[in-house]
Length: 413
Length: 143
Image (cartoon, rainbow over all chains, first blue to last red; front, side):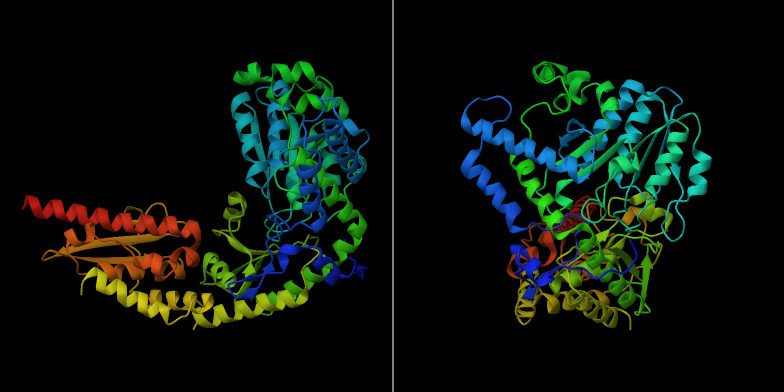
């Protein structure tokens, strides 16, 4: 991934496909560097949403009328697109959810409730987003299971030696991200998975930060579960997928089948008892799922290797420019990263930096990025995070650096 | 000077910035830099204003029916914003603070400058000031 490639894509043409980028914020052209939170949507995704609502909005899987057929077939087309996108073995291994958070909760709740026992261990890493911490804490508490956390190195990488020590025959689930949202670190997930399988533990990969940047082949990785959010891969908000190995998903009880909700979901359950429908009770987010297909096509047509090469060039450029400012300290210096750079500036609070950059039309993220334990391990409250997408340019990075120079000049005298 | 005269003064100062966001942010931070720093003992949990995204500390004392505030924040912009409140409410009576209407915020387009998250924090700071005023008013009445 770190080999420098020359991307075979026309960035100006790509920018033309994103209407939102062509506006002024506080009198300055928008520079959008909050892509790790959500990235922007190309015209074809927006058009798919309006086409759906204007042309064939209908409830799926139930009606026999023409619109219902058309909507069902568009919805299922996206399942096929996602199936190919991650190279799953079976199409029914693709479950539509509201995104990564729901996908993780589904596994923690369904798998955890059915199979975890007292004293079983769940391993996560110190790099995780709250959404890959809290669901496991909840199920661990409920089942009296134990949550163990893999340490992080000063560069922001998973400490594999520590991971090895944590693994045992008590380990039942390992849940880590493919790439870190706060630091950008790309984790050696294939190695993590095979080490977990050696002790017969299942592995869930949070792919939120990987889907738009890294090739994903769930069969090659051999992960048991893989989670993706549509809105982090140029698709609409409010949808995403859970991939799970068929034999595991078949064993798992419906997500909504337990506790007090059982009365409400009986209809759905009795209607859809096969995969993937047993996990898709109720009317799903049809429009957003339909439009997600266009996001997949957008990425495929550009080619992930081209996207990655362009973003890698941007990351290297930004890292070099930031490093040249003596007051800036980079947080997260792993050798293998997606296009995320976190940093702090001595004696200036990240909120002030974010607000000042916004005044110049530059959108960055400030704070703990929903990774408070990770921030604690660095002994900081939060960072400023700039994250890049395929439509960003070096000129935009120059504008951010100019903004930072002005802030430093003003506040550090 | 009355609360409303100070508010009018602030409105006219901000109008010189002509809505330029960057200049406004710099100006707010400059105001904050002029506010004396609180000691680390004063920056205690007891003095923390709850409900702000950044950390804000505030203390108040009563002198001859007038209240004096000290405040600080760990972020430069919030410190500037709180300095505006200190400027408006310092040396005012509990009654005038309690009945004050903070119209300057809308006039200088505060929401546009600070966003909803900081607006909530600003409301928390204002509430804290009014709580101090209420406490001192009660104290004065019982003496």
